[in-house]
Length: 282
Image (cartoon, rainbow, N blue to C red; front, side, top):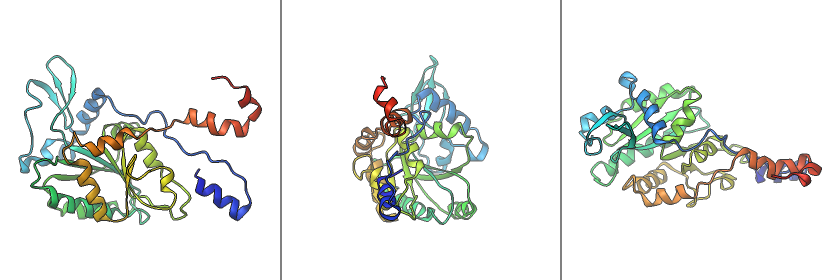
């Protein structure tokens, strides 16, 4: 699944392999405004855990100018009197991270980065509210949730979620920035979660490891970090002046996910069935 694995197989086992990089399924894509409105309409009605402006109520950071004349409002969107859905101008930036909550992914790196980020930007009028959504289940989730509950943050909010399978790609399609904490112990494989994020046209901040550059090109379709302080720097640069953040827009424009069918026809089909591949007509 990587060039690094192909080289390793050749060096250690004398295996001649061909590379077929993973690609995201087609249902990972950018969400429409209507899809955003429907999903966050449901996620905003989940009682105390609801994803809504009330998360920042004590900070009095809610903006009213973008929802005058609305009939229905979510954290990200509003529906005007004519029934059309629109993205809110003063919506928070959505950052998403998917984790297995194990020692293989040190979630403390992200938590430390967000704590430092909040200190830096709490008085910065050009920095948006930030909602960080963390999906997944695992043994360390309760431990980190207890740590999160003790935080006193101003602009940053962190919420853990466990979504229905169909809602996970919809959520990614609504988000602005992904964070991957995955590190490969072998240095031979790549995280599918980044591919899913790319499928949703989302740039990522990814923890560096050997062979990551086969997927994330630092400064092109994402940023690579080695420490929590470096991640803090990256999020501050990417999200300042959101939603008109030039660096975020540049990285997003360079996210060009492949798809399985095209990938299969180009790389796998000629290897498995070379005679048919030669005669194949699109």
